[in-house]
Image: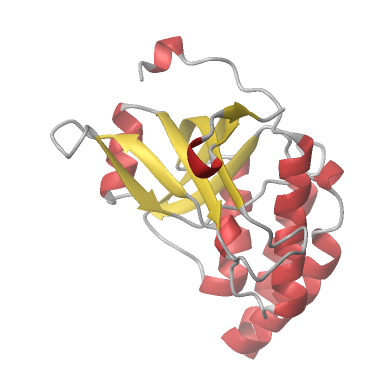
Length: 210
């Protein structure tokens, strides 16, 4: 877990990124914005003295726009928030959902190497990741009645290096995206989980996902 020995980030498996985009579009179209369990992994971080030496925290993960689109999409979200906040939170949320219908269309439009989350800076998980950035994200979807490609059984572990950001272009993007649905957050940090490897761990297996 020494950050100096962390492998370089590499692209997420294409099928995983396509699944994440499809989940979010499904959330907008069918769930009124309520997150699907597939975007809420458990983040496992080192914590000596607790059980076997690690602890797991649930988070909601987001996708970053592709670097070529980052500034453009951030500005669109900022303007959408500033134009709609005077109409009230419900109206702003509806504007945001309409925007996301066109936003979640193609995996080519998103950063191929990372996922993000926005957390209060004082959370224990933030402190753990600051001390030991290497971590795991476990995506567990266990809905046996849903045989669709979006909802089928999955158990994936993403090995990642956590980058904590309190300012900058990535922080701005995540903050304005979050503001459309939860208001402008203060005293928050963005955690950027940079993908290193992925494993299929269903039913005790350990198979690398490429």
